[in-house]
Length: 264
Image (cartoon, rainbow, N blue to C red; front, side):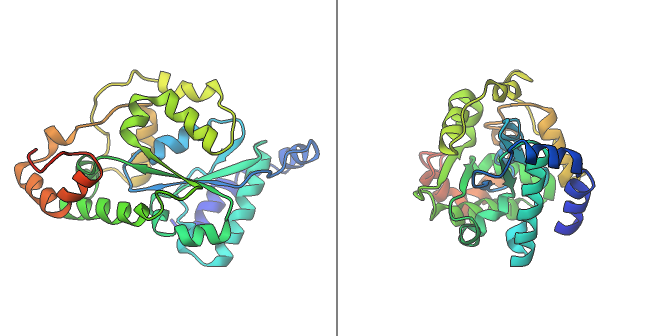
């Protein structure tokens, strides 16, 4: 589905002029720059978007827009639509999550120089087996992890970008969310803990398979609540796939601190 159709389906079709005017008159306006979530897909970006969308000050765009792959005109249109949606929902800022925008950070900051970006990183082996379930192409899955994370690596020290590890987010949830709130200049609200309480954190398989559409993937991810899917590669990765991963991304895995050597 293209960006225009997504906007028509999600924002325009649900636009409530009464609520917009009422909130506008009561003083609700866009008062803070947007927040963006980027990273390699299947690294916890959907989970984090859902969590931050529970914040009373943040309207989370409910789809991946890929807006920065579109024309400047569409970027401006999306900005206006999302700002209206935010005010309609009584929230002073909006958040957008498209993992592949990790390749568009220069353009993103051209439009939103004061925005905050959260960059998620996850063990490439877990990402690869998860993406492989969706695509059925292990080499493509590894290549995606390498290319996306290399694109973001140049921005790790950027003052307006915060790097978050999926593993820390799922095992030290409350502290990580508090750090994220401080980074985006929002007060921490206890409502953000409800996502973690929705289900006990435990090891379990993703519900993603190559028989399910990407939009359905994300819905199933949210239904599970907070879960810890660390180390799923140990069970799911075949010896041949291990060899391929080591060849394509083994050194990078060591560089990122997920392995001490190639003996795994």
